[in-house]
Length: 135
Length: 178
Image (cartoon, rainbow over all chains, first blue to last red):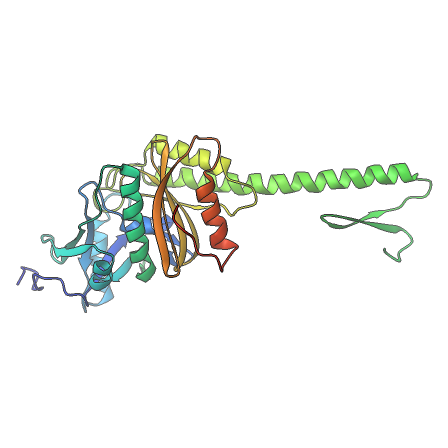
């Protein structure tokens, strides 16, 4: 059991939230692939949403919105959907409820690697549920 | 032809143009007026596309400004790379006038994402970084794939144009990797 009270292994049925800080991450009510692409560390940072009320999700999101950033919303995707793209999800606390999407494709050709990563991100975006933040 | 004695219409490839017939005006003058109206219609069409491209480029600059600091995604995202933004602008300028323009977003590694979204199941997405090759990926129903293609800064890569065109025009022909 993790300090947050969550299980160490992220279950396939768990909802993962990827916070969105820019309206450009959304097009026609659809989350764009760019929202799921990994950062410099090769991981995509997400939070395990579980059965918590949406208000607790926004509380976490706003705590990440340092400076003049505005929380626009969150993309929800199940851990199972992530794993079906060939990626993995592992708990990565602290902070509480944090998890990381890992095992992104690697290789020697940077553009082909980027394309392969983008294809997986598109798959995740296709199944993602968009939640818009309430002011 | 109009039944209004003061109006004459002429058919042309863009539709029917009405114009007033004035007494004492020669057929040569009417031909000249028709040619002028054709020129104006063509010019307006060009301006409409220039306006759409200008809008896309303005959107690119907004994204560049909004994502200029490290961590703009709430994690460790890199600022938008200036060279990547300029190449994305070049791709928009080079984009064929008869194909839909993309939406713009930033990527965590500082690249620009150009996205054509028909629905959540039909998307073509291009990553523009500072190098002279573009990464792309698509999903089109059950079909999906990715690749990379060179971009000389002047001509939009046919592979990408073709992929976007199929996404919006030809529903029955799934994209195929090359």
